[in-house]
Length: 177
Image (cartoon, rainbow, N blue to C red; front, side, top):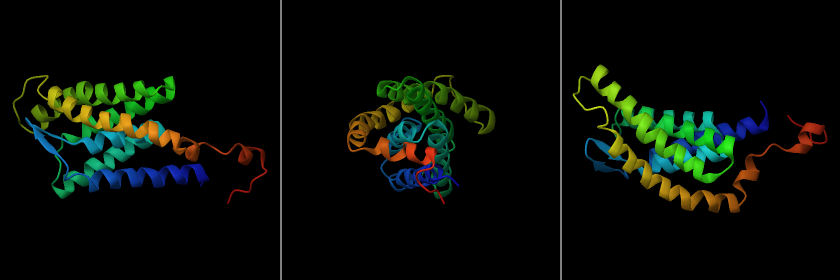
């Protein structure tokens, strides 16, 4: 297994663990829970690991929270779509504001609409189409604000270089095991 992949897998697990450990730090907002840790972890994963790893961390976090009773099924669509869109926009456009916008739009709008479908079709709840958008937006906004502080600090500390592929390894001057 390539060293860069192992680093990303380990960081994905660490980000999921961080989000799960922080899951008691939630605030009820209407029919949803405001869970800022999930959203800043989504952005950190999206920026430093990429969209697929960020989405995997969001899935693992949501699954653990549901199994522990600290989250609901509504955690899946918003967190996973927000994480993926955050990572995708950042890696395509290379600007942090796009990562933040991806998290907000992916979680609140797309995730909120999918949560509506999940709630009405599979959970037997009655809700209006945009019922989940405002609480998902508030939750996502709180985590995005935290990420807007943490991510630039992590970049300044060199976290992005930690995940960059080593150019010497491609030329064969460094052994890989």
